[in-house]
Image (cartoon, rainbow, N blue to C red):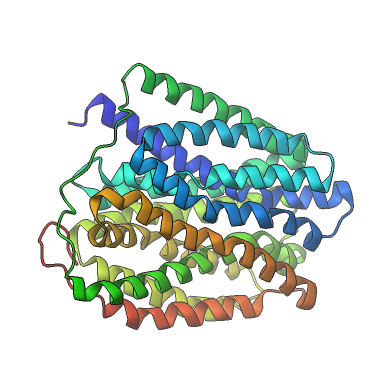
Length: 396
């Protein structure tokens, strides 16, 4: 039976994942409200997130280093507090410059979760895939909840409320986690699992590093392209057909990410039972094929196809994280996850730029989806060439 400390740690790790992704995603819906209130173009306003999206990636390395050297749970407490304060200040911004500064701070605190939180989860239990799958569900829920809550608050109150109310809740969670650490209900000290003690042969490291860097980059690119552009692509392709307003678009995005987030758990269970390498490879191939179909779709089935693509993108994450834990020295796990997420989220500024330029030039995102499809399809063959796992602790 899990101990009280494990249950509390699991709770805060899951809610932390939810809040990180919620705060990283809410601006993509809130911007639709600011567009009307401030009378600036979508292209101008979406670019305010450029530095924030950059810092989500760049902050991962120092966050990982601090997590390894100090405390993963302590870093998550700092994340909750920082996200809350930054979001409140975003809601209080009255100029584009101030909003850009506060969004940038929000992005910096978002950078803490993945290097600290994923390492925290990996070392909690022997059922690593299941634990990662359960935790990853909350990332999708966070994106969905962010879209739903911000759409509702923008539509019924104001875009400011869509920042401030979640910010207050995050501060309260940070205070609660700090209290549990202070009272020793949650350990401040890091724990290390012996499950991933066997590392690959030295001759395989260069090949592994190259393949994993490319695959992580492409998976992150596809994730960010979809997350950034889905609200707008639904708006421009389906609004006339389905009479959608920002609240309804938020509900659609919420449904996509919440439902697809459940696939994380399915992917986690599969990763404990089957080859993580094959799960990872075939998940990419399916995404690539579906993205080709999604690129030019302009009817209601677009929503279903978006759901399936995001679901496969989510379902391979437990396999990816297990592969990284398998290949990384235990004492540098958080740093390795930091490198992963600096790759994944440093793509954010590029994606924001590409989405902004694509919309400004063509009023669409067709070629972005097509490019993602090509990348994901080619990765299938690269992943299959990764070395097999010798140990029976984790299936290759």
